[in-house]
Length: 108
Image 1: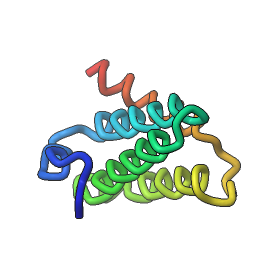
Image 2: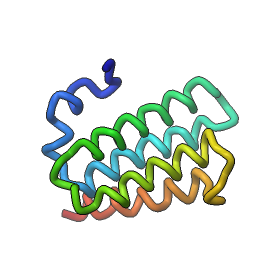
Image 3: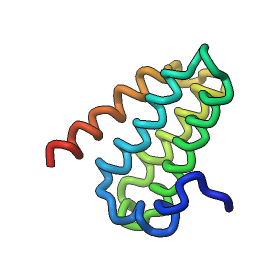
């Protein structure tokens, strides 16, 4: 697989705490929010990078007990951006959820 985040995919991602991982995913959703309505290609690229980071988090064996929450995050993000809006969420809400993890990671 071709990763946008080559260093992280090579093992660097697994050195981060869960809060750091989710905070980094939030950085991509924040980029997507900033590009939404301005540049569709940049918007979509940010979403794909966020999904890539979520997949790396899912693959991190340390979070087996948190897997349901992480997989649900991916499901809700996909539904929000590409789906039928079954969950009724929006990108800003997802970004706000992830922002809290960035704050937590920074506080440590």
